[in-house]
Length: 144
Image 1: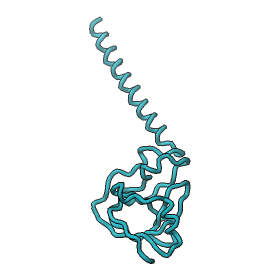
Image 2: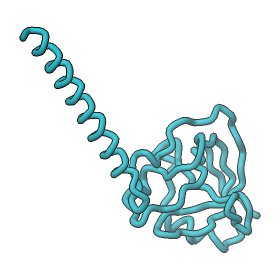
Image 3: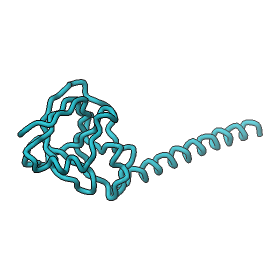
Image 4: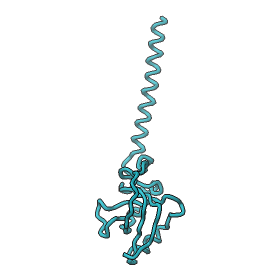
């Protein structure tokens, strides 16, 4: 009888661990739904290389400012800008005024590894496209 109880306890513990694992996997899948952005879409690891870029505002699909490293804004040239500090943050309306003004942004910083969605765009429904995310440390407005 003693031996049988310990086997049942082991199976019980295993069952609980299995149930918790399944719940975690299911909830992660729910959070990664295709229509809603989630914390899994936020880029996390900065690449070590510092880069200087000149970028143009591509547009604001769904309210997220998308920039491009070329004036034509091809799919592979699009990116999100993420300020390194709150002091570098610029109002979206300013970017709109800049769009056809003959001026562009010159920035320096680092790319995040892979593609993603900056945290400030997580509220947007449906989920914005994933693009490269560039964390800029300096920002200058220059004539094209």
